[in-house]
Length: 153
Image 1 (cartoon, rainbow, N blue to C red):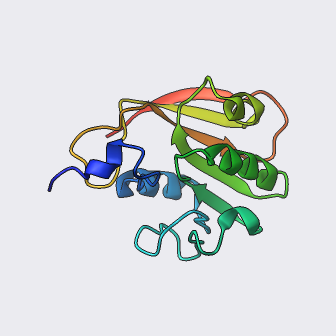
Image 2: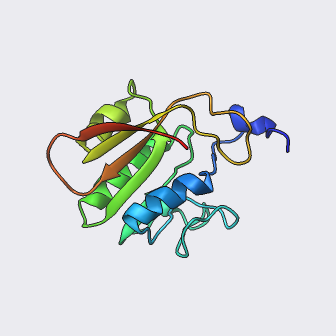
């Protein structure tokens, strides 16, 4: 398979979660909702597409979020933080952009930040993403995050 030319440019903001990474997290958390999916990429039985506008929906249960990585990513991080305050557990796969406002305003209030060693290979790409990634877990806590790292298989 060839590399999707839009994968490493601003042409696409969607980076489909590798199934093995989702499965690893799903085994731990038991996800019930994927609020930023396409019909083809949905990881949960219950999901919202862009047409459903996951940002405008209430999230319940255990939520897996791999948001579009464009300019609106901060809105998804804020929504994840806010929904965790309403008794949902929200687990995000996001770029590790520690210099951004949303990182300092919301990610630093997460219960866990798990930095990924190496680069995630999104979709069917044979190479890793051009940015580091992190798994951010919001459980509604109010303390400092537990910060760890893990190696991809």
